[in-house]
Length: 246
Length: 252
Image (cartoon, rainbow over all chains, first blue to last red; front, side, top):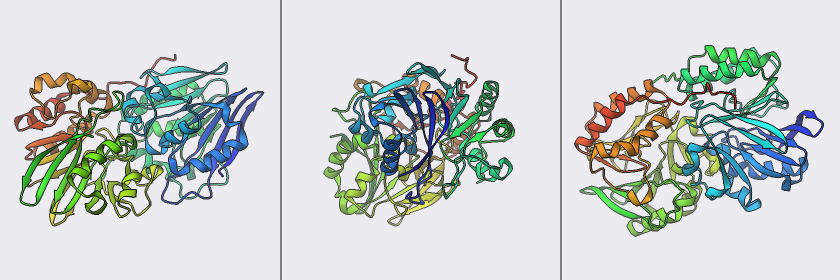
């Protein structure tokens, strides 16, 4: 079972992070899943692949009644994002999956039917979670061609998928970045090599800086909070990406 | 079951394409799978997703004995439609190996396979020795995937181009070969503009491919480009402005 922690809590509005999986085989990249709860409704972000499904389900059963998880937010199409799709649909055939619209034909190769998906247009959309407004923010080409982050304006938390991701072999005991400067070596190679377009990356940095998030929550690595958020955005803006050393 | 067609045959070497499943769900993106055969050893390129495995497999068993002779899978990149069927192919042959970019080596095991299943390809590509023949793994990074490779066979002059050259067409308009390049452009324009994000990487790849001697350009989706159409496509793609979708976006 993965470790989990509620890192935002205000009345019936909560964010949980699933962050440490002691049984994860080392050849699998580590992931973080986030549960956004608003009253009796729960949305899960980037639920991961078939291999990590049991560890995630067992943690979620501790947090909430699984029947309350009726929707999933997918930042993009990668194997570590939602290749567990067919397993989830066995458990919940009525699950609503929010997906960038360009990936529908591709995603159905994992399984499911067209009706399982709510397609997000390129400019983003609002998602209502039991009265809480969440916003899908475009992050195309970072790295995926069709890619969204999820903004909770009330909690000031931005789920950033692969943006901010760190490649860490062993899952840390805490889900948070402790020292930003020491964190840079863990994120630099990933952002330089996986991201291909400086133009799109910089558009994102400018837009997200205006949102003034309190936290940036990536799918791999550690959560940025407080002044680390601004430092990360500034660092990414200055970084030259798309560099390939042949 | 899908159709199949032999694209090239000389001596003990053969290229076969597996294409067009008449019973496919219309929402599932159509795909072409290519089989390279050298003697009694076979390599399958981008074998497709979990959902289309039965259609691909039922065709393949008409051609070869996959449990014994299917040795390798070549995955151009990490997408669901490329190789999410790998855990099923592994059930057919537990010894099967999958070539993929080093970038995705820790991502693809999320849909199955062990650490030993995947063979990482370095960014510069490599020569792939396959039963005595040499195939060339050609870099196509950020076209559209960050870690992306094509496969070139210098003997047959066949170039497997993954998503490059791909067409999005309704099922009733599928063709195995491009008939008229100009008429084909509306089928490929939106895909290349929208999925590809970096003109610099796209142009670098176009220049690389324009310098090669290619007779058939074989994408994973849509129709195959033949002879002079290859250069027509490459010149069209070189001139196309891609990545026009912005992240500026207005607050909804």
